[in-house]
Amino acid sequence: MSTTVVVLLVLAGLSESAGRVLPLVARRPRLSRRLVAGLMVTGTVVEGTVIALWPVAAWTVADLVSRDPLPSTSCLAWTPALVAPLLLAAILAFPLLGPFLHLLLVAGVGAGLVGPLASASGLGWWAAAGCVAAAGIGLAALVEVVRRVAARLVAGAREREVVVA
Image 1 (cartoon, one colour):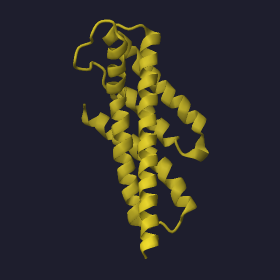
Image 2: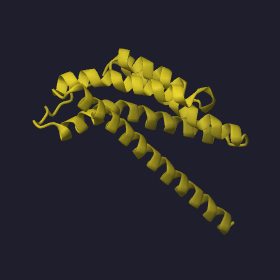
Image 3: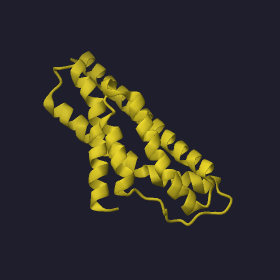
Image 4: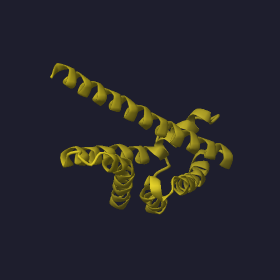
């Protein structure tokens, strides 16, 4: 993975993280700067990692649905041309700026992954599109589950602190 792609993935992760953290800060203006910074860094790492894993997950799903086993190394990887629209989609992740437009741009980026996956795996375009969609939805669901579990753990820890005090 080139340095340009890594930088774009980090920026996309940062933007996605900001889109999730800033509404929280707006609702709770008394949050400490340290907590907000920690949430932003953690969110950047998680979102950037999930975005980076999307082609790998799509390749894995394609391997599962393919009749013939695919090569063990993924021929599918992010390029600056594929990641740049994703960065734009991440910037538009802010809830007030248009979640539908964000979804549309993410779908467009996913469609950009379909062609390389179809040609590298030998699957048809629609089967590759299904693999990319399944991988994207699966990664999004996994992140949402982890986010909710972490929120419950944090809320439970704070509840126990209040009871003890």
